[in-house]
Image (tube, rainbow, N blue to C red; front, side, top):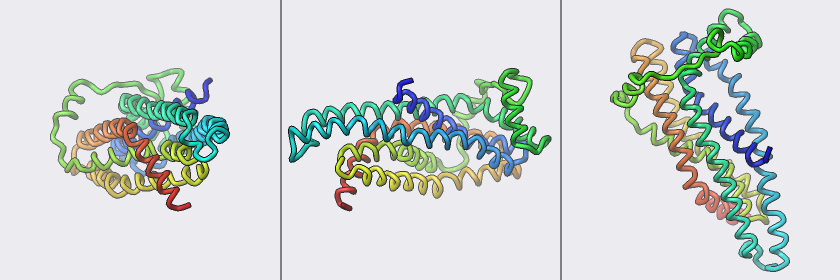
Length: 289
């Protein structure tokens, strides 16, 4: 398999899991085992973490192989300013195209995750109940894989939201201010672009590309701070209210639904902010060194 395509699929998978993260709270509320739901989902998230550890070096090697030869050849022709050579500029254009293709994988994974939410909530609820009966994560994983060959008879269930449910989610007035959705949009766009922008910043400033790549953590941490401060507390409050019977479950469904849409728009926005962030990181690197 082509390396870039493999990175594309890994990125899609990571964003699929990220889209399903918040819907795990629905399963916790339905089964009245919220703590178990949060704990079990960490097992699911291990798969995304493993995919992330594969994605980073593959992306880095893709960028290294793309710019190394072009930079060395450009040095022979333009020893004073190799980056401005037509060859290196053409390499940057091609690299930008490849990295944008990877971002497209994030969009695809988010779309698939949105459609998978109803099936995931039902299946994850079954997994929580199975854990309550067996008390073993390994047995739950075993039962899940067994149900893959007998869908509908075990943990794994496939379902879609009804038209009436979708209509209610879209038309019902949200009971809390919508500002957190915009914060989530900003956070997810930064989180999607941060590593890719860091790699591109390294290509823009190849003499100190390792420093430029590490600068991406600034953007990533900013995205995490925004999410932790402005988004997660709202979701946690509504989840607790639904669990205590203060709010209806449909309100939590609606928030999870619109957060998934916000994630999707965030991946699209990351296409726009990808290069500006890279230029910012490159300038920041020049200032530091």
